[in-house]
Each structure stands twice: as structure tokens, then as C-alpha cells.
Image (tube, rainbow, N blue to C red; front, top):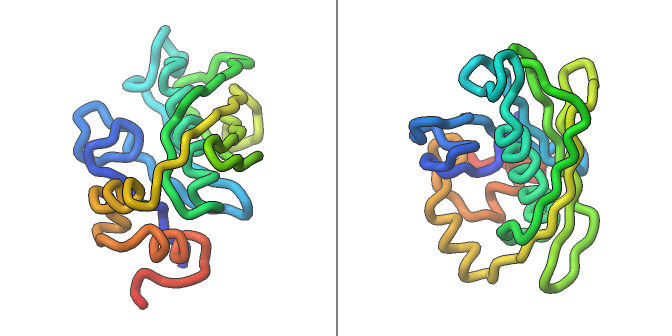
Length: 168
């Protein structure tokens, strides 16, 4: 059984309690972190077009999760770049993937893509992330849940990557 990565209830991107939420979940698929968003009019900027801020937020999160999954600690964005290739129409499902590319002791790097279900590429991104300490990672993890359960990051990553189960 595939389990999502942890999420924070108040997060704009993954939280179910944020008033303007996207409410997506992140999954590990092969060496990438992936999410999907079925867009509707609440996601639009210009009529019929998904807002660029929504497009940017999704790869930021997937790119940030990618090195976390590989290295077992959380990180925060230091810099992200998003290259918009074409407008994404409202009403499609966006498939967003992020992959870790480099890990230095003080800076992790990742890339991301925003496509539709047919593979059309709408945006490409790259990001640099500052890793948190083990203690900071534990403090953040105390705020997160996985399918309503509290667990350690190690347990959550094992469940999300298929190396274990949150049920023991």
C-alpha cells in the first residue's frame, strides 16, 4: 500500500484546514516526489488559466520534499526558479514531480516539472534548499501527520517509500 508523505493541516499546499488550500498529498514514485492537482476555477489567474503562483507552489513543495526523502531531514527553500513554458488551462489535472539533484552539507538542490496527465510540459523549475538540523527536523515533524497519525520522519519515509508500514 502506498502512503503519502507527512503534511501540516494549516499549509496552503497540503493542509486540509487552510481556508484557501490546494489540499494535495505528496507521494514517492521511483526516485521522485509526485503530487497531482485537479484544477478548477478557484485556481485561475486570468479566466481559464491556472495562476502562476499555484504553478510555482507545487514544484517548490515537491522539490523540497525530494532531498528530504533521500537524506532524512527537512529543509527550507533558499531559492526557487520557475520557467513557465505555456499557460496551464483550468480544468486539467496537473502532475508535478520533483527530484533531488545535489546534496552539499549546507545546500541541497532539486529540479521539478509541471505536466498534465498526457505529459504536456507547462513549467520547469529548480530549487536550492537549506537543510534543517536533526533537532529542527524533529520539531517540524511534531506538527505533521501521515493519514491522521503522528510518527517519526524515519517511519513516515519508510512507509512512503515502501520500506515499511506505519502500522508496524
